[in-house]
Amino acid sequence: MRFGAKIGLVLLAVGVLPVALLGLVSYTVSRDELQRTVGRMQVQAAEDLALFTERFVGNSVESLRLAVSAMPFDEFSRGELSAVLDIPYRQLPFVSILVLVDDANTPVAGPVFERRPERDPALAGREPVDDRDLDRFARQIPRAPAKAGATTISAPYRGERGPARIAVALRIGKDRTLAAEILLRDVEHRIAELSGAGGLAYLVDGHGELIAGVQAGPLTTEERRLSEVGFGKGLAWSRLVRRQDGERWLSAFAPLGSLGWGAVVAQPMAVAFSAAERLRFYTVGWSGVALVLALLVGAFLARMVTRPVQRLSRAAAAIAAGDYSAPVSEKGRDEIAELGRAFARMTGELRRRDEEIRGWNRELQSRVEERTAELKTAQDQILRTRRLAALGSLGAGLAHELNNPMTAIVGYLAILKRELPAGSAHAEMIGRAQEQTARVARVVEDLRSFADQERSMQGRRFSLVGPVRAALALYEDRLRAAGIELTTRFDERLPDAQGDPVQIQQVVAHLVENAINAMPRGGSLEVSLGTVDGEALRLRIADTGKGIPVTIRERIFDPFFTTKEHPGRVGLGLSVSHSIVEAHHGRIVVESEEGAGAAITVLLPAATAAHLA
Image 1: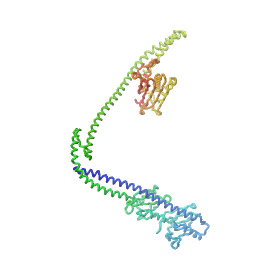
Image 2 (image 1 turned 30 degrees about the horizontal axis):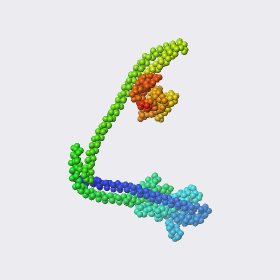
Image 3 (image 1 turned 90 degrees about the horizontal axis):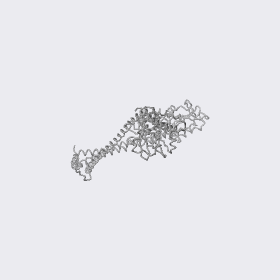
Image 4 (image 1 turned 30 degrees about the vertical axis):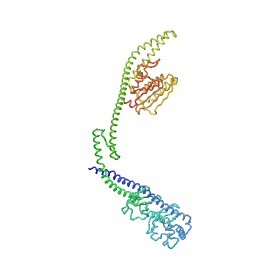
């Protein structure tokens, strides 16, 4: 395909198709919006017609009730009742027949009507009534209500001529009902007004049958469906329906709740959507104009673009061969010049991307080194654990071997002290020897405890809050005496731990003991409990003491290592704590700066994780 043809197709796709698509979308959107807008207007008109009809019928019935409410019908004879009925008949122009009947609908007085109302000027405009009208009215009289003053209304019906009408029964006394035929002339006048200018309006009964209004031919299935849905759901709505002539109309329905009728207002679709149809016509016309312009512009561009494109192709081939220094023409202000400048920017971007890739390589190397350092730390942790395990075995052997002779020494000293007089110099010397043997016994006990922690055990589930609070309670007096302010912060919802709560309490006690020793002049101690991603428990004990120098930070967990000037024990507290935590599948992390306090974090797996480990 030649370049000119390609440009023509591109122009068609860029110039004509958007116009056509935009016009189609605009036409569809406009038609939908018009349908909603005009539909709402039609629904409003239908609701207004329904309200007018309800008010007219209600006012007519109320006027009839008021006209006869003050009349003592029981006090008149049958001959007088006919004359009495003539009074409300003349007062109510919408009444065409008036009759007094008993409960069997047998006439008691009347009926009152006019066969030729034009002969009486006072009755001008009344609807003439003949015998067939009387028979039809007699058949339509509804059953009288049981309560005096109440009314019942018949279904609408039509006569041989004139407007639609209804029969009303008004209970006025025992075995006395006033029946009247009310003409819906005013309602049909309103329907005629709404049916002007090409529109259409009518009333239907509860079965969808026509009551009032001009309608050519019977209602179609779609028109009946409009009323059925409105009656069934009790709502006012609109939709497009097809009438007998095949045309589509936008029809709206509104129910008359108190009467069980419905009001319909319709408008031809061509009239309702005239603005959208004009938009479609303009869209087709301008699409044709755009097509002609696209063909002309395509032919012009095919000649103007071919030679610059050839020069640009040679430069692009040089760049594809790897020569980023190949010159690209950037002169001019047209699209070809823009393309040349784009090639130049592309070359610079490629060079920048190469630099970024090298930078990413350096960053990746740095991350690898960081991970290597972390791996080395983990290996050091494993080596320390193995070293502590070996020392634990050694401590167990030493404790066993020292325990028997120490027991004998303690016994001999006790016998000697008992045989010497109290207060003698030898008794005091033996007492000091007993103190030293007690100290050796404590060392042996610490060695045994350190060795015992090397045995891993499942233990049981327990809340970590309990051992922590129990350990803190043991040191309340010492903290208060040392002037140390204690702050605790426990998360509300913590998973359980798995193991021995007594051993965990021992760990907390050792850590608190070290924190108190690190703050001889008082300070602050913060103990917090939380979780790590909901899968591990975190116990953090932070003090504001003298801190731990970097040079000895790795040795604080070694057995017999201590920094106390006058130690009362031999430095097994942190070693025992480390062994207990390791036995519970956890680890201890130390954060400290010399002179700025220390923070020791104990990480323990949650109960489920510990159980599966």
